[in-house]
Length: 220
Image (cartoon, rainbow, N blue to C red; front, side, top):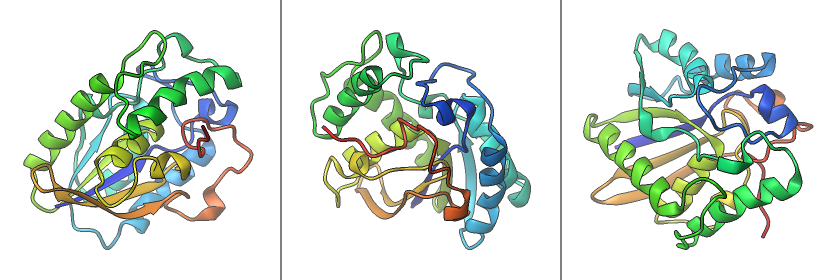
């Protein structure tokens, strides 16, 4: 089957570089609303069977225009939410961003014991995200769209797509409404067909001045 993972539109936290992972989370900026509005046209050629979003409202708002255009309900799935920041929640300083993204980078290379301060390790993240993807893909045989989050998408795709290295997605940015398209199944494995780091609506919807820690390329 075809699995389309889309990062949510821009939020106020993305603009200031805040590690904002708690529920229900912020809504979208004006630019974020424009990014969401551009999604249906960008996916016009996709045979979409279902639309999913996380428990965080920013993904649900981003999914709404596609839901309206296709006449499909947005299904909220508990397992596809952002990687929790723990003790680093709402921090914006460089040291905190590194402490958050550092373990996530390690997870992509198989070091699942690495833990985010006050939160979880890679075993926990992949257990919940793998379970969510398994449940979503078991329910459909064609194309499912999942609106999720920057760090979560980058970590999961980097670890589960068999045709890229474990560090690919963390060294390549994923802007708001950036998309990863995969093909395969839980049983057969996944191949990354497309990685679009810029917004689905085009580069004109990109905010190059935003401090966006979960979307930017990560360096060791």
